Length: 110
Image (tube, rainbow, N blue to C red; front, side, top):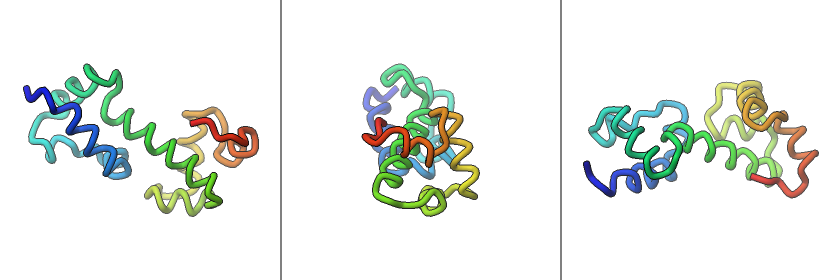
């Protein structure tokens, strides 16, 4: 296996995290099986590529809200089908709806 593969996957996810989070189509891009890519990435970063993309989505959600975007605008920018889906996803990860989170945590820990 290519020893640089995990770094290449990470670079790709950093630039395409919305697409990776939604479709996770890394196998076509890298021409390896999904399980091979996932294993190589997890060995280096202790996360699957999907989990890493999820972290980037959450971080971007917080940053957009901090910049003053509404939940609806944020959902649209991050390609969620609805603000409710973004809110549900966010709450399942952080335990708070996005609007609650921004009120509760003025310094926006990510």
